[in-house]
Image (cartoon, rainbow, N blue to C red):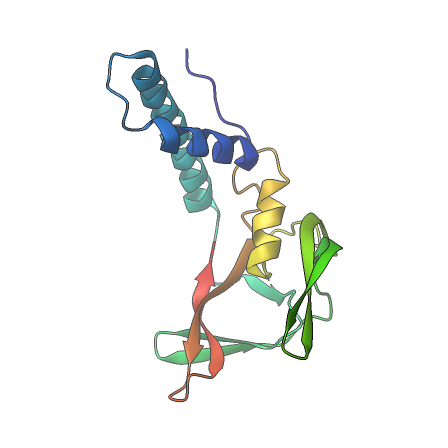
Length: 175
């Protein structure tokens, strides 16, 4: 009987394990483990995809920008501008200074960074999409019991740049 992967953390652990044993011969203990892990990972990915595809994204959705920046979303030759909502969802960060690096006359601090809980993220509201940073999206999904539990969270898509290379917005949204 195949056990079900329930969290993103568990998925990542099993995915890392598979990457170390994926080339083992079938019929050996490690080859059998690789086959079993592959089935678990595929089932988890399919479950998350199905949940997202079943999420009701209709034409009457409200889009709330939980970043501190105006979003210029480029799509189908148009630009949709979304002002910041005034609420900024963030990830708690703990930094510990490790040492300094000296380059000529310049001193650069080197820190160890640990990312913690998401703060200031509203609860889901039917018919509302929240746009958050990619880090907030990742941490929010890491903190829940099932993959993509927060189907209402999106982050800005691929960066849109002008001819000089300056960022002017994003191409769509990402999950």
